[in-house]
Image (cartoon, rainbow, N blue to C red; front, top):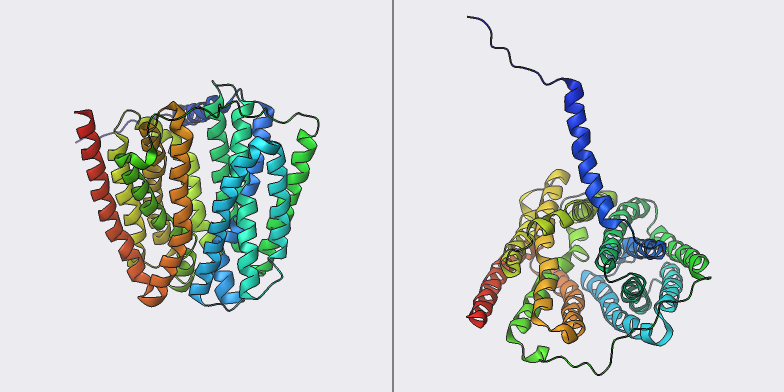
Length: 421
């Protein structure tokens, strides 16, 4: 019997096919971000530098407990003090744009952040660290709303959405770079984290000043103060449910900044650089596939998509106690990152769908408040459960909360369908 010969695809044809696939993939991204003003790219660079500075935030729990000798509840309070400061900074950052301009707010934010980062390397007393973390949160988080305001004012209506997307991409790249670099710096000396972040912020300020010194600031907002939304968000029952669901999702997500690094270090027995690499898996995954997934799901019910996402987000954290290796940890990160991609953007879409044109800012502001409050409450609750009942039970609790969230989204779907009927 003659042997069966399987035809081989010539190597050159296979290579051409692979190159064409890569070329089409790259072309989609280039097309999405072409035609934006140079100033918007510079603002994206500032956002990248600002988010890369979160390397301190990712390792603050370990720094407080292992280097300064604070208790775990005290470490949770330190992280929460940053959250309180960020709540104030985000609000003031937006308000100050109307008074002094978005460019000036970013200059103030970068300058103060650089100083506070460096100052944080000196104190070893609990009250001093708490105060500086609060001031750092207020100054650093003031940059985000002012940066987006400037992008909005510099872009035309046709390119504004792409400008925001570029800013989000820069933020995620910063979140990817920061923890990786921070992990290696922590192995040398934790204090290097503060100095590198401080110098980076001050260098970004110098570049920002050099680029924008010859340009006028963005025009003041043209939004009329007498525009009143047709309905109150506080009387909108579906939106209030969305707010609660957003708060619970953010409580789970906040563990990434509080108990996740501690668990990986103490239970998985991985070094700080490995913690940074695991966090980088999250942000790289977002940068590479989030826009593609969101585009593919266009036209689907956002509440139903978010229900699946919330389950995946909580399941990813709940799977953590079942393994101990770096590769398994990376797998769990990929699971909850997939859930994050399906949940966080869709919550914003759901909130926007509840508001009329005049009420968009109010609704999105309240939704942002749910995240800011969760970043204060989440670390406190998470570190308390971690310390009191055991690390594994915290993550199993996240899994149970996923079931609660799924039920909440099911209720939201039913309420919104009754409204349409």
